[in-house]
Length: 458
Image (cartoon, rainbow, N blue to C red):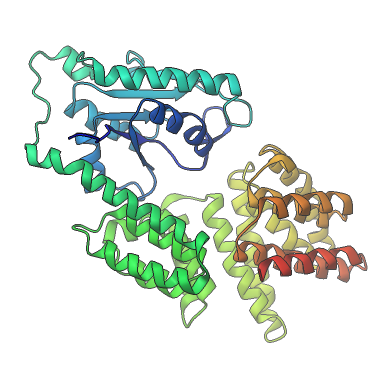
């Protein structure tokens, strides 16, 4: 069809992920923005990006369509994710050619994949591409993508070693409709993701409600669009909509750990009858089924922390029990992976708030370990809101005014969502109270709190 560009289906993670081999945090969004997308554009093709975790590990209809029908598949094998390997296997079994594997040189490829012609790239210590590496990767990928379409030699091991292997041949009408369907779903996804940032809260809620009706009218209701909606509602704090949408999810998707974590967050924030109890039950169920991890235990700590705050002044014994439960969850989360600073900084805050000498000493012993974890993510050079907020909180913990001012300046430059500013403000208010109990409170902390309040209300 004239004017229609070839489609590249990109299988790779979103965001920052830890490499279990090297312990390095890899910024896959940086790699996508700085190398993969520019290479695809330079090759004159259109990209559809897949997140192997978006649907909680469940491959759905749209995923199969794209693996079977996209002219080219670009697969990042860096983390040797089971999902990515599964999807690569489907592609190799179905199509003889036009599959381009890539990987970061953090470890060798698994033995069974070592013979394939994969494109390697080199990362800096901070998990990003150096300028020289970026330019070389863009050039190599542009060449490989163009070559994948121009030549007819097979790159699938199955087609290479099994004579007359038939592959998968779909009806012509299915192939013909593929690109228009992918484009329609991609456009709808982009609308959903961009809505919270470009509209006021009321306008965004109305727009997302209209988009939800459009999504639910899609045949099969694509899973990735449901999850896009869930996260977009979260960004505008529409917790009723999040919970209502979740209860309509198909069973496998609705019970996946990544979705349950988001819903536990929403239930806790909504705080209606039985919501907090349901959030605790969900999070404890994830830990019981999958083992301790910083994300789940960090969320569980937050639920108990909010419960503590609601009980202070009304039921002191239950408030103290909730505080102990929050500290326990945060400490267990930090012990599960000390590279993840989030549960660590929250454990420090609550140990100080507890007001005991034992709590004070435990907080002081955790502080340098958490600071080291944050430094490993770039420190004040980071562009991540939570990295910078943690540096700010550690500066207040240790009464380091200049460090706090530097972190605050950087936070204002990077920016955040209203609920992020509010979370940081509430944490600093707790730290301020903890210092006040030890007669250590300083006026500048209150000034920082007020500036956060101002940003929250913008």
